Image 1 (cartoon, protein in one colour):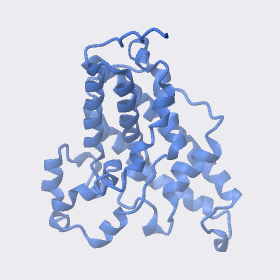
Image 2 (cartoon, helix red, strand yellow; image 1 turned 30 degrees about the vertical axis):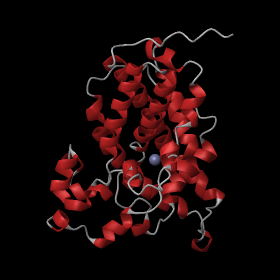
Image 3 (cartoon, helix red, strand yellow; image 1 turned 30 degrees about the horizontal axis):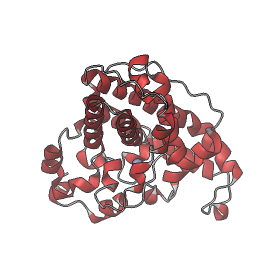
Length: 282
Ligand SMILES: [Zn+2]
């Protein structure tokens, strides 16, 4: 891996750039809803009447990408660091391992840590609107860490002639089929190791990449190659959902569960505060 130390091969860098939506609006809203359902009363009270705010701002960070520093906050490419268990734990370590190009390989786990600390500060500050907004932003990045194609250099299947797989998986399947799927989450709990978890979530998501690509290829074989344009055939979608639907649901549920745990942990770290009673309506 010596070649990666100072310069990433150009081909890899080119694969790593490009637009990333992540989960689409519906997926991000689903994660917020699941997390709220998982909360015990103490932290849940902070969001009373603000549930819509949480869903409303769940996709905000995807609209901040005119800032060139924003894109890499939504992913971490695992391959340049070797085996998934050898991921760097600090930005300094990332830079020491791969050189100055480290930022373009993604900084997602560190952004999750920063946004979680923002949520702790919001709980301490006592303003439920700020708690809701901080939660929405944390929830966005946390959910992105559960998208398999946010953990790999080839975000969009370009090297295997599967361009478009990114949105077919995280938006195409979600928008076509998620409604009506029964999603559940266990009760959220305080997790003392919450700041270590992003690396585990990324590793788990990364392990799902090969099968996801294989299932896309298999679904494509249902249609004559000339008809595999931008829009896939109904037969493609039926087969892709049949194979990857359980994975989409599992990743949304685990993102909802982990966001619930992150909220409870932030609330505990802030000293289990209670929101001030709402001012009386005139
Ligand atoms: Zn995103």
